[in-house]
Length: 102
Image (cartoon, rainbow, N blue to C red; front, side):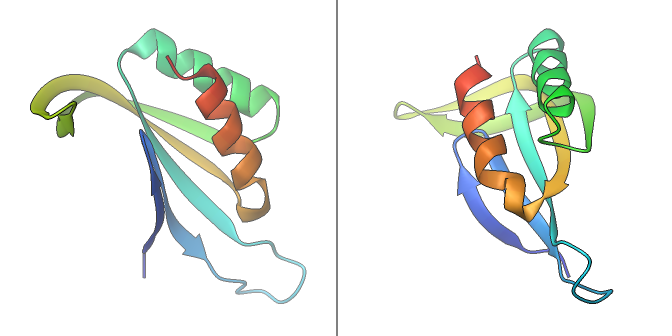
């Protein structure tokens, strides 16, 4: 059953996969991260995959987002990054995203 385990500005960890195959398998997480344009999404995806912080990055374009920002409700077009990684790598991945996210 998917669960939201944590939320940060611009990204969220979902779907912790429990250790189904014994002690040899790590827990995995799917990280969602919104980005304002395709160029930024590709840049972040390439960096985190090259640095092996994520095994895979998917980019979905054409996302419509409605959210609170500086006391206003804002509606924007964004891209969604879907990043698959080990739970043990999440903190490093989070810090990298915070470092390079526009």
